[in-house]
Length: 477
Image (cartoon, rainbow, N blue to C red; front, side, top):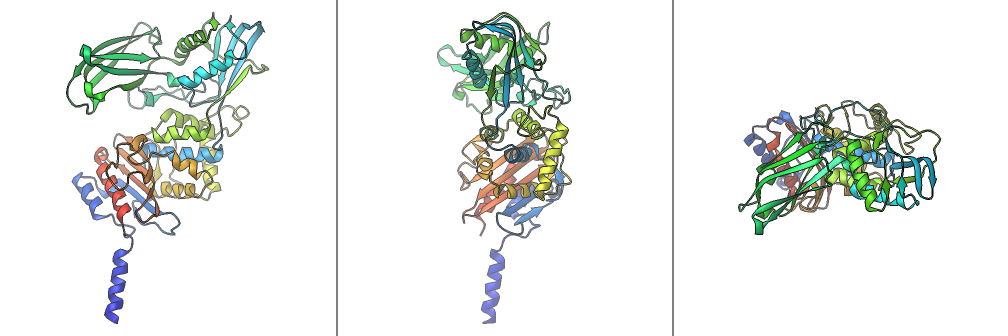
C-alpha cells in the first residue's frame, strides 16, 4: 500500500504546475538559442481565481513594457470615464448669422477627441451644415487650448518626424494630420499607381516605383519614401517613392504625417465644406474661443468602448496619449480644463490606490508605451489584468485586445496552433524591447493571465520564446 501511495504522490507532483521560479525547458532553450539571458526577461503567469501565480521570473523587476502600457491606460479609462464616455468638440459662431451667412469667425474648440478622423470630421461638417449655415465670411479659428503639455517635436523619439506613431497630442487633432499613400499594382501598364488621400495642393508626389513579379514579402522594406521640404517647411512637401513593389501585394497603404495642424485642417476643411455646398472666404488661424459664446453645435466623439478597441487592437499611440490626458480631467473635461500630464499621473495613482494596488516602480510618461522612460513590473501588470478580469468593464476591456491569429497586431501570430482564437493579448515593440500580455483560455478551459517582457538588444528575436511559453501553458496538465 505504501508503494501505491508513494506512486500517487509522485504522479500528483509531476502533474502539478511548474515551480514559480522555473521556466519550461522549451522556453529556456529558445532563450539560450537567442543568447537572451533570463535576467533580461520578466514573466508572470496567474490563473484567474487562484491564490498564487503559476510561474514567475524576475517578476518584480521594473521593465519597459512598450505598448503593453496601453492596457493600463485603457483599463483606467474604462473605469474612470466609463465605456460610454465621449469627447466633445465645440463649434461657435463669433459673429452674427443672417440668412445662413456667418458675418464673423467660426471657432472650433477641441477637448482631445482621439477619433476625429476623416469620416468623423466629415460628419462634424455635415452636422454644421444642418444648422442652416452655408457661408462663412470670416476665418476658421482652431482652439487647442485645452491641452497644456510640453512642446515636444515629433522627431524627438527616434528622428522620424513624419511617421504617424510620433504624432504629438493636440486638443483639436483632425484625422491625425495624416496623408495615406495607397499603392495599386497596374498589371496592364507594368507600373504602380500611387494615390494620396487626402491630397492637399501643397503636397507633390514623385513616383519611381517599379512593379516586380516576385513574392510580396516585407513590401515596406522593399521601397523607400523620402520627404523633401520646399521653401516653406510648413506646407510645401514632395513625397518621393523609390524601390520595388510586387504585383502579388495587391493594394497596400502607408501613412505619413507631414503638415502642421492649421495648414492640414485648412485644406481639409475647405475641401469638405465645399463638397457640402458651403462657402468659406477666410483663412484658418490658431486662437481661442471668446468667452461667453453659446455653442452653435456640439459634436460628440464615438464612445470610449469603441475607441479603446482601436487603441489596443492596432496599437494607436496618439489615441492612447489623448485618452491618458483625459484621465486627469475626468468626465467633465470642459470644467476641469486644462488637461495636463501631471493631472493624469495623479488620477492614475489615486485610482490604483483605491483598488489596493501599490505599484511603486510604475513610471508613466504618456500612457502609450512609446517611451524610453515608462516602467512597470511583470507582476504588477499581471495583477492589473487580474483586477480587470473582476471589473464591471471586463467585457469592453478584454474585447479591445487583439485575438490570436484573428485580428489586430496578432492577426498573423499563432496561426495554425491550438491557441488560435483563444487568447486576447496586447503586443509591444520598441528597439531592444518586446512585450506580450493578456488572457488565454487553455485546453482545460482555465483562464490564464500571461505577462512576458524582454528588455535586451536581442529582444527583436524573442517572439519564438514568448510564443513557446503561451503554447506550453495552453497544453499544460
